[in-house]
Amino acid sequence: MPKNIPSLKPKKLIKILEKAGCKFYREGKGDHSLYIRQLGTEKRIVPIDMGAKEMSPAYVLRIFRQFGFTDEEIETMIHK
Image (cartoon, rainbow, N blue to C red; front, side, top):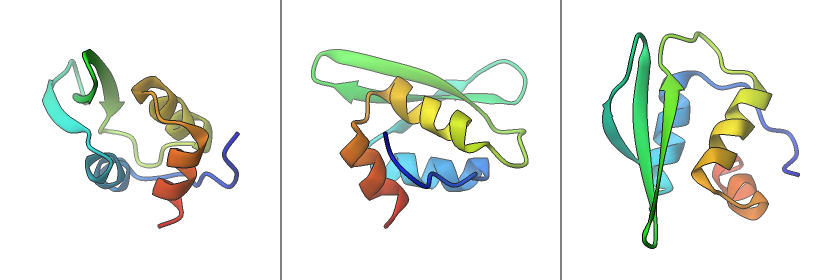
């Protein structure tokens, strides 16, 4: 389990995800945007609430998990 995951604003989370290889897919319903990550032949599409002021550490971790990042990858992305 990664330690010290901060609460993040949506734009900061998007920057971290894009550096890790995720890309904008399309607009979702309401304030959500869909982002995609290609893992070999598998595609992972995850909605991100762009209307949130701050995303809780639990929400940030859930997004990383949905994209299929390992604990080591999460630690590296967060603490750069």
